[in-house]
Image 1 (tube, rainbow, N blue to C red):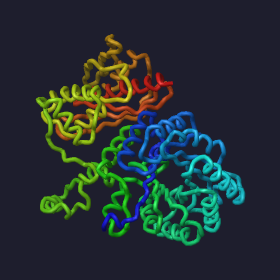
Image 2 (spheres, rainbow, N blue to C red; image 1 turned 120 degrees about the vertical axis):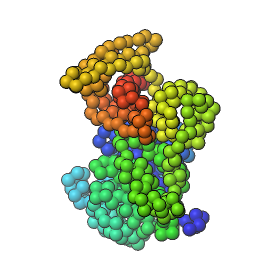
Image 3 (tube, one colour; image 1 turned 60 degrees about the vertical axis):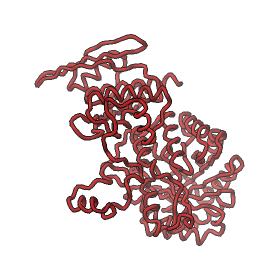
Image 4 (cartoon, rainbow, N blue to C red; image 1 turned 30 degrees about the vertical axis):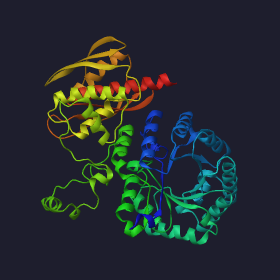
Length: 509
């Protein structure tokens, strides 16, 4: 279908707000800004940066994103409570484009048990809140929480009054992931047909994935007239998560003939931002995840391989390069120079400042000495591991270990800080435990390891291993990573990076 004839679907990303509400997914301010920049580069229309009133950290994060993002609208969430709306405005007032997103529950179960309000009180609160928000910012969105379990006549009235009060967008959330796709489509049609002033607002949808139907419900709503969809990268979010942005975007693109809709999204950025969100949250992307999983474009069955070799479209409905997947191939080696390294990073969509490039190139040369073949995935891992948004207080200088069957492992760690060298030995239940105890004795800090995972960045015996840890240090949960061809070294780097992140957070206070 001709793109010019397509209707536009507005992409509202809530990775930084609803996505971060997933247990264990908290990100620091610099990580949120990195993701916001990536969303802006991707062409996301609206970035919901947080819930300003909920904590000073959330307020500061929204304020920071609002200050730096220029091309996307920055949105802050608020309950239908004056202090929430005022906090959202204060956090957003520096934004070039700002939106306040107010919400109140509309289902009987929520009104009775959570709000302890009757429908008339809820309606009055919604009207007052939309008017209050509209008095501060022109772009207002109203959400009827748990809309899919609400009585339709009350929902219609609530939406009508919200639009009268100044809402430009009305959101119909499937808050608990309860509705079925056909029902949701009918609900959207019912709203369009029964709310007299619906033509004065954009109909939006926000679907949770409790029954695995978040994307299907969102697409059904779009087919039936919704023109904004709220979603998250990798589908992260509370409980079973949210509708996955990448799946919705590629469904609209791949089946433009069916939906007749398009987006402003630069799809080649999809894989890069998927990896970034996974990196910062510590949530691994499943290999079989649609669009961004490692197996999404791999073919194991012989008949599939034969077909793809003859004609890719026999088994591929999308091209890997359209979502930013790059072919694994040898591109650099130990004799490659700084210029070639920089140019290859540009092709991969990575641009670094001179100081960052110097750090990354030095690390690349060290890796190239150990690996015969350096792949694109290796380069991405090197950059993500080496170029940090915080200063490295502690760095790993040397690591040595002694292990044997029926003997407790012993690891000696040598760390550097401010020009001084520190050496300690630790023993533990395994080499990683011994390594972490040695590091703890040097930095005078003890952590609680909550999660530890490892995966191979590329293939082969000399592949880079990437270790991801989630650790509690000084009461804060930190996600950190480390890469190396040596797993123990990667584990040590991950722990040291976690300590450095904590120190950066404490210095920033």
